[in-house]
Structure formats: structure tokens, C-alpha cells
Amino acid sequence: MNPKRILVVGAGHVGLYAALRLSKKLSSREAEVMVVDPQPHMTYQPFLPEAAAGNISPRHSVVPLRRELRRCKMVAGTVTRIEHDRKVATVQPISGPAREITYDHVIVAPGSVSRTLPIPGLHEQGIGFKTIGEAIYLRNHVLDRLDVAAATPDPDVRRSALTFTFVGGGYAGIEALAEMEDMARDALRYYPELKQDEVRWVLVEATQRVLPEVDRDMGAYTVQQLMKRNMDIRLDTRLESCVDGVVKLSDGDSFRSDTIVWTAGVKPSPMLDSTDFPRDDRRRITCLPTLQVVDGDRVLEGAWSAGDCAAVPDLTKEPGNFCSPSAQHAVRQAARMADNITAVIRGREPVNYKHKHVGSVASLGLHKGVAQVYGIKMTGWPAWVMHRTYHMSRIPSFNRKVRVVVDWSLAFFLKREVVALGQLHDPREEFVEASQPVGAPRV
Image (tube, rainbow, N blue to C red; front, side, top):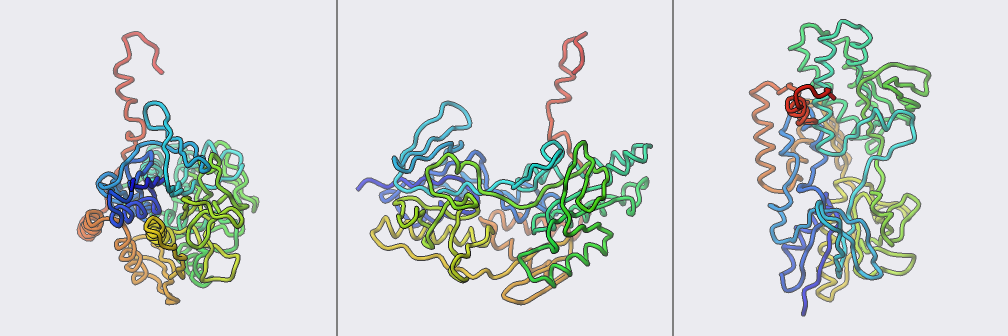
């Protein structure tokens, strides 16, 4: 029997965990697992706020794919098209011509991208918070703004540099805001030119609450804690414009801000537009509880999906509900999907995915947090410990677990690193200037 080819599109939470499990369960005689992703690593997104704040090394929040998926075939590139009727995917390698790859089973898991709105100025001024590159950039940018404010004699420039605006009150926005404020507060000890009350942190949330994944009282507690740190929390308020860094809000307020971070939700990867898979009204791939792709009443043989880009029925709730786009579901869906693919290859029936959401944990900065797990609510230091313990247990590989714990342990004894490495974002600038021919105009 020829081995089946299982093509994994994307190496995020779903793709990595599914490929890892398949490579362990299936022998080389049964299947070949091929993973396509343009990045050489998987980013553990719950650690992005801590990486941005300097609590852990950015390298320790990512997992090298080739080291973890040694029994899989890796293709560094992007899937640009999938024709499931032919069971063919078109792959554009990071270098060289595109090529077609045939498959027997395909796992479509390209994940999600930031869900933006047509707000004037957002494209030019905003920065997201979904990738390790964005996290590193935000860290360097915030510290750079402190340098700008300390050096300038212009009060308007100073005020704009020290105003940091975050749009979106979900977990990503709240954790990013809280961790960056914590880092900036530590850094201000080395800026005698600046005072803490000069720094302004603004959260803009279109609904009347933050952290919709937990009960309202926990969201209210979070708002109270942020306000105690003199943060400006704007609920039931929308960002209407940010042209040239001038933030205009729906409540009529307007101010300049050099930093505008967009964390207002996600949407399925636009790569899905180049496939022939069925989609729902939110552009997610329609799936059965078995994680098989379904078109109406017809199951598409050999097509599977999960995670942020898939509409998977939530069997723990009333009909019509779908699993939330969280890492908690993605990891467990990946395991169930790998087991189901293994079962189908071996001639057995797939099993439904069913998991009751156990709750959520969030960090509000060093030694501060909020958690609601199995109905138990915790705040402050206990919630922060639970947040760290849970995510340390979930990040893939023993190597990364050890490195993260070492980072945290060192942080108890050593002061936080608060130096900006902004040259990382344009490393050739100095060389280009130095290597210009004599007499050539400077650019």
C-alpha cells in the first residue's frame, strides 16, 4: 500500500499539534506528513505580551518547526491555491517558481489575521499584535517614545510621544496594554526628565465591557484595576479616525498619539478565498463536529479544518453555536483531528470533537491577573500564578518550557531589561549611509 500524503497548510497551533501527533501515530508506510508555512517557527501567541514587556526572551515564545517536526517534510512557502476537486494545492516557495502538490488528506489551518475596519489613517498609523515581529516592534517603539519625550523641549511632541492608544478590549488588547504599561513604569525610573503622570495610556473599546470571555464582574474588576493605574478606559466608544496620528473618538474627544495598537478582533486568513471549500457568513470553512469539511449535507472526503478559520459546532452548547477562536480549542481540535485522520486511514470512523471551555486566564502585568476557570474566579497574584502555570504547561516542547521558566526565575532576581533595539527594524540604514560614494546626494 502506498503511503497517504497528508498536507498541512499552516503551522500555527492547529497545524503544529496535528502534524506532531500524526507523525507519531502513523508510520512512514502509512502516511507522509507535509507541512507548508512561510515561517520557520510557530508563535505561541499567549506569550506575546510577556515577550513584548521583556519578561521572557522573544525567541522563547516561538517553537522551531524543523526541530519539533523531524518526522515531517517541511516546505518553506505559502499555499496560494487549493483545488480540492483535484486534491491539488499550489505552493509558492519563499524562493523559486510555484509548484503543485497533490495530497490524499489536507488540513486547512492558515489561522487568522487582524480584523480591521476602513478607519481613516489606521492603515498608515496602526500596528497589530498578532506576530512576534509586531510584539518586538511595539516594545522598541514604546521605549523609543520615552527617549523622544525625554529629549524634546516641545511640549506637544512630548505629549504625543507619551500617549499610547490601544483599540480593542479583548484578551490581546488588555494583556498588551497592561504589560506595556508595566514595562514603561519600570523604565521611567531611568528617565529623570519624565514623570509618571505625564504618560497616558488609553483603551478604546466599542462595547460596554472588556474581556467578553469571562463574567461581567471579572471584566468590571479588570477595568477598576486598570483605572487605579491611571489608565484612560473608554467603553462604548469607537475609533473614528487617526489620520497623521490625531486620534478622533466617537465620544467627541480628540488627541495626538504616536502609538496606535489595533487588537480589535481577528478574521479568517484571506488565503481561504483561493480555495474551493464551502464558507459560512463569517468566511470560515464549514465543518462537522468530526472536523471534516462539509458542503451542505456532503462531506468532502480528505478535507479537514480547525482553529480560527473553521466553523466547528460546539456540542457543549445549544445547536447553532460554534467553538470560539481560542488556543484552548485549537490545541484540542488538532489532537482530535489527527486521531480522526489516523482512524480514517486505518478504516475506522471519525469521532466528534466535544470540549467544554474550561475558562480563561489573563495577565494584567507583573504579579497581577484575572482568571475564571471551572467556575472559580481569582484575581491578583493567584490569578497571575495560574496564568503563568497554565501557559507554561501548554507551550510545545520541553526545551521551551525550561527556557521560559528560566526567564521567569531570573526576573525575580534581576531588573527588567528596558533598552530599545530599534535598529533591528532597519539594520542596513547605517551601512547604506556609510557606503554611499563620495559626493553622492544623501537619501
